[in-house]
Amino acid sequence: MPQVTGTADWHINADEPVVLDYNTENKTSAQITSLFSSGPYRAADHDPLVIGLNLRPSTTTALGAPLLSRSVRLIPRILSSTAVTGCLVGTELAG
Image (cartoon, rainbow, N blue to C red; front, side, top):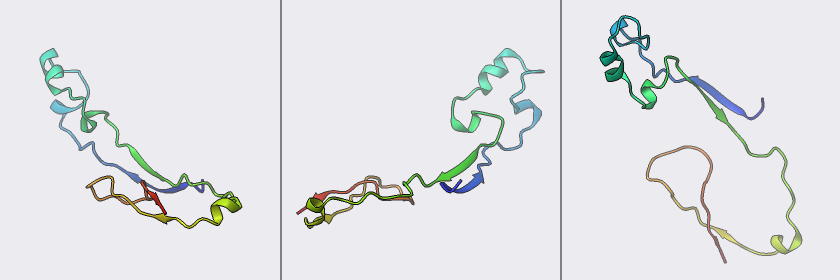
């Protein structure tokens, strides 16, 4: 698995008292309806596993002579105001 860069448990499912758990026994239909939420923090009763992937190809293809003889300038563009880590997601060819 050379493309897997890391794994981690995402502990989003806090331990819950019986009155708030996902089981429906000992709950009225009104309680079941009021406790439902479609958000990610109420999506399952299990903690998901987060897997980091590097999906870049392990081999590269050589460019032909017309592209190699041309000089280009790559200008990165910030596409999000949120701090992220990873690879460059936007460029502009100039020149």
